[in-house]
Amino acid sequence: MKRVAITGGIACGKSLVAKLMRDMGFATVDADDIAHELIPADERARLAKVVFRDPALRKALESRLHPQIRQRISEFICASPGAIAIIPLLFEVHWDGDYDIICCVTSEKETQISRMVTTRGYTRDEAEARIAAQMPLSEKAAKSHYVIANNGSVDDLHKAVAQFAEWLGSQSHC
Image 1 (cartoon, rainbow, N blue to C red):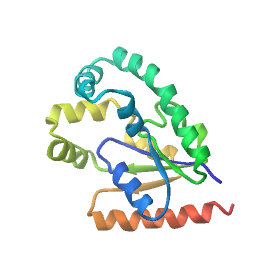
Image 2: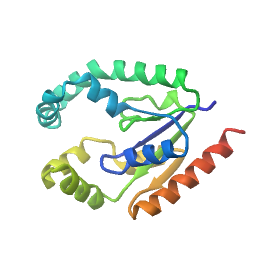
Image 3: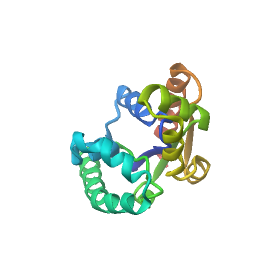
Image 4: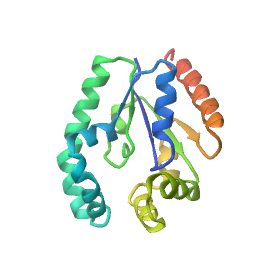
C-alpha cells in the first residue's frame, strides 16, 4: 500500500477533500483534528492569536505537539492500510519523506481570505497573517505529485476529487 498525504494552504478545502474521500470509502486521519485533541478548547483561540504573531512561540508549541501528531498519524495508517493523512504543514515539518504520494489542495489567495473572513470570522489582516505563516502554495504544489485547485463550486471540487481517487487507484498498481 502506498502512503498518501493531502496538504495545502489554510482555507483551501483540505477538510472538504477529506470528507469527499471518506464518502468514497477512504479512511482519513487529520493532523488538525489530532492537534485539537491535544490542546484544550479553551486554550486554542488564545494560543492561536499569540503563536501566529510570534514565530519563536509557534516553534516552541510545534516542537511539543508535532512528535505526538506524527506518532498518532503513523499509528492510524498502520492500523488502517490505505488511509490518507491530511497534513496542512507537511512540507514545513519535513514529513513529506513519510509518504509515497502527496496531493496539494490549492486556492487563489483572495478565495482563501474570503473563506476565512466569511466562515471563520477572521479579519482580513488575521487571514493574511495566517497565510503568510505557511509555505507559499506554489511551492507546496510544485513539490506534490498531484494538485487539486479548489476555486469553483463544491460540485467542481467533487469532480476533481473523483479524478484524484481514480488517479490514485492507477498509482497503486505501479
